[in-house]
Length: 337
Image 1 (spheres, one colour):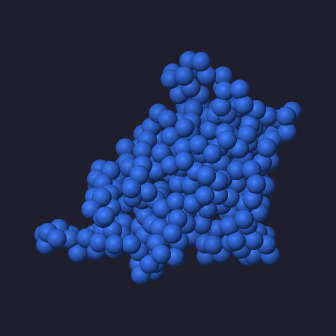
Image 2: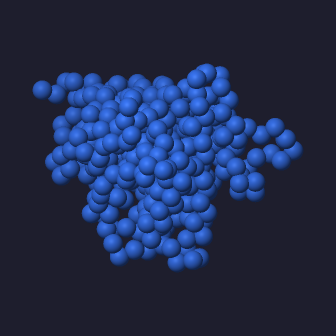
Image 3: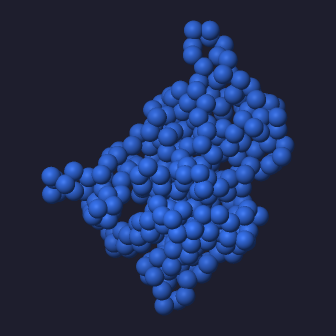
């Protein structure tokens, strides 16, 4: 919570506006207004998450999303909140949501020059037990001369102009990059604003924590198996093994990795040959954030942000986190034939 003895609070909107003025002299302010709409969506979802159990918003919604996953009631509500907030901002031309099979093309009277890809409620299987969940988003600018087409979002993550996530747990923290480093803002519920609390987030070059679903270890390839074995049983007897921490909510696991270092992994395996996490609205935004914080993100064989998605719901393996930890992982893949 912000210190109310201070009267010069740095809010997210103020901070982004200052960044635009200082680093993008030609900026129109449209990105700032778009981020204001995303903030509103995050505040609205945070409010609903806090009172979900009290107003019967937990449990299943008796429907499945395009991924074949059973939707929770909050999944559906969060998706509607973000779609409405983004459409009404007047700054968006195309939206891609985890919850919708097709891309959403905004009506001409509301169209803007940005495309937003998002997972409205990541980790929603944890809703009923109170584990941290969150929203992930990435922003592209439409191509020159385009009024908003599918090709405007089917692009490498290196072309994103902004990305972020918002956690909903013991507090609501929005972590954001606009390509000039990474900052974190915590929601002060008394004044209804995200306040700068984590300026210039930098991932340690090496950590001591790994996050992976070891229940899938029987399906891993050789490189993964050897890498994780090396973390648990280091060749140098004097080195301590890494600690395992896995929440099962990407937002929660990546947020810890951003602050404490280490590596987050969701590899491809014999069961999910293309990986499980979605490229556009999970892998790309998190990879963009991690790189901006001084870390590294890869598929194991290729920089994550250089991947070309073929469809809006395409999947990929991903390994991200501290630069040296990810390089160690890549060395195991490079040693494979």
